[in-house]
Length: 504
Image 1 (tube, rainbow, N blue to C red):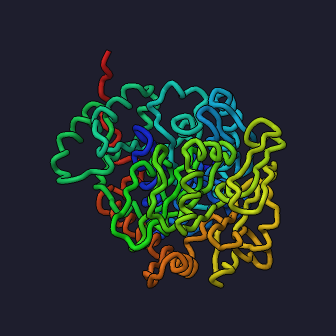
Image 2 (cartoon, rainbow, N blue to C red; image 1 turned 60 degrees about the vertical axis):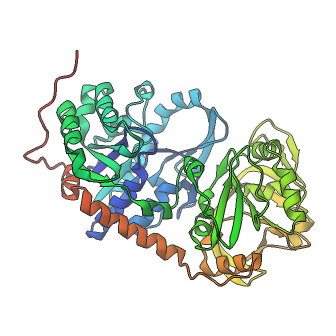
Image 3 (cartoon, rainbow, N blue to C red; image 1 turned 180 degrees about the horizontal axis):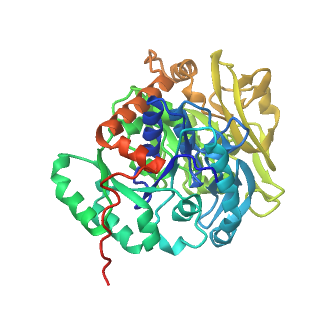
């Protein structure tokens, strides 16, 4: 393989901040004048983005591409797993659906996917100065090491140095790093060029002894302690685990309730609403009733429309929606949520489950949906018909929706009507993801819910500002010169350190 300078960030566990650190490093090195690209060999997420070459990748890699100042491509995330059940997922390879696989089936499939992953990595790295690679989960999950393409298996195949990231905010950071060293093979431990302690709160100097202990027991040098970065909440989140920690701002003029479906997808659609200073967004978790004071209820995207429609009814949210509408509230469905609002959802080809399965929808829009094997993946622009404001976004769905309700469309996409609005205007739905990022549309839509002055929020500009702040944060707290030297294969006088003796 062509040896492009590259470095891989792996974690002592999930949710230690790898995605955010990669985005920050991408922006920091780009601001230094380097041509940088992000790469994640295997991602598992139902938050996905449409790429410039007509495929889909993880939403985190799209944000990292943005940090590099480039459009996302499928080579940035060649394997994407989109969970559809507790034990199975849709497998997307180089942007296209390959099929569905249960967890045990996928373990056997990984060996076949490694050549595709290396092909994408090679193609991505050929014209650039630096590739920053993100692992998945943790290399300490040695029970999954056979056939691995996400962590050490990929690092070994591509011959990459590794930085190990640990999260001190969750506690046990010394054990996480020393324990990872203990379970890695000798060869894998030697591949680790250093470690980063992430999400530190308080006086960093108080952890000097902790760093000394970790380095003495592992032989790995510390490349920095990164203080907690609260502005990260203003960037799109990748994992649904973040929803469980979401707090509802009180005392806001507008309240929007979002159904937290079991297979919720592309929930970053709601980030621009969360950023509005006078809007409270309440992700309604299973077991909770819809709040009675909500101005709007949003049915978000879903990776499994039929399963989530059944889940919605199991929670009693269909009854809550009827009560919400009787109180004069509004309802918006996006993608899978739009499909649920119709009269029926059918699956004759078994796209989501047993062939022929059909379900009665919520009956709030006069449309019907048939799930099909063809997947719509495209960026779109148009006009929101009610407010005559410009919108942009992307379509990412399986299924064809028809019916009389389409005669009252939600948007006009360059002459193509899309979505539906109920006769009384209280219920609407469309396939368009990302529409709330358009500042003019968002302001007009919210003003249609309740009389309000536009906040002036420029959402895309805010994301750019936070990425710049994150880059400056990492410049201040990580040894980025050393990181670049490691990626380039430059040996320094103080690395590698003497190898510690492993306990017998």
